[in-house]
Amino acid sequence: MTVGALIGWTALSALLPGAAHLRAGHRRTGYILLTIFGALLLAALVGALVLSGDGNAGFVARDSTLMTGAVLAIVGAIAWFLLVLFSYVSLGPDRLSGRGQIVSGIAVGVLCVSVMAPFALTASTVLTVKDAANSIFESASANPTAAPVKHEDPWGGRKRVNFLLVGGDGAGNREGVRTDSMTMASVHVATGNTAMFSLPRNLQHVRFPPNTPLGKRFPDGFMRELPNGGLLNEVWQYAEDHPELMPDVKDGHRGPRALMEAIGYTLNLKIDYYALVNMFGFAHLVDAIGGLRIRVESDVPWGGLYGTAGTIKAGYRKLTGEEALWYGRSRVGSDDFSRMARQRCVIGAFTQQATPSVVLTNFVKIANVAKKMAKTDIPRELLEHITELGLKVKDARIVSLQFVPPEFYTGSPDWQKIRAATARTLRQSLQPARRPLAATASPGTSGTSGSTPTATPKPSRTAVAKPSQTPTPNGKGEAASLDELCGF
Image (cartoon, rainbow, N blue to C red; front, side, top):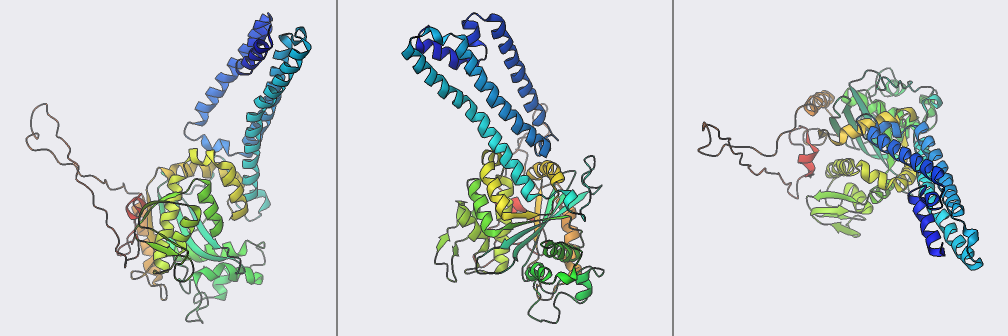
């Protein structure tokens, strides 16, 4: 056998195990290797079909599944290395000349390393996922106040699960956490239909549940004695600065607990979990998925007081992480309420465009960013169920309401009105979405035997906000679909 033929048959064995042994006359070994390889392919196909079915995606997020995947990848790397090596030996390289043995040995050595590379990459990726998940999500056993997660009923019989999504201002010139973006997402467990409530950072004198430490400290509202103070975005840091108010709560958990109590009491809902993302870290998350497609209603200058850093032009744009961050943060020529409207569209766009395929393709980058920039009290044991719920949300109806003037005054809020609007929005989130096209029967087809009315679509009208308006307004305190508000 020539050097080229020997190298070729060895390389073929890396793709079709047993080929080199059959060529060398070791038929029994060759057929055994082919049978094992076929069984592995069949098992992989069945596994892929099972995991792609409904209710199985969360299985991948389990710690045990990830560890098993990493171990299997390492075993696969060793097995393929040995397969290539023994395939080479079975072809009798000792019958080659000295030079042929050197050339073929080098080529097969490179081939051995090459076949191990995909398995090594898989193991590295899976371990990165495992490390990121365990870094971001704390085990329920490590948090004595966390309710145990039951696999058969992870949501504890709740029909809705409420998440507080917080964007923290992590600028280097500020101490502590300033919660500049606060959105409560109420997810219907059965359907995934979601109601999002955006609360302004300058909502004043929020109340706390009366039986809580902060409720007793501020019975008339947060810092009611300060006519121009007591803003919602100060609650988190106030609780962290006064640990004596919550001595039973661990350091770092007092701020989230206080903010969840304040917003939950304001909306008359119990908030189950929170997630905090550093605002500047969010820019890296956007870059990790390749940018965000956004409909920009009007030009948005950003940078400094006068927008000297740049302008995000009106129209349908694909924004980089930095642009998406400043699109949601800029107040140049606008106000906090305009910024809130843009923020919810950024959140909605990220929810829609971070598809499973996009996340899997860029997971290492996403995991590394999230590990450094995210904080949450969602238990690690709940991650697989969160994954399943998230897939429902992506294809479900999402409505949004923001509590902004003129319908909701932030300086003197009507708490009962806010609660009534919240309850109404929750009911609305379960209603069917409005169809964008209307169908009318063509003349002459109605009543004709054997004929079918022809639907003539009427173009839907999308209201475009004027530059002086708050982008994507609610209109009279009513919630609306994010598809309608943001032009997805």
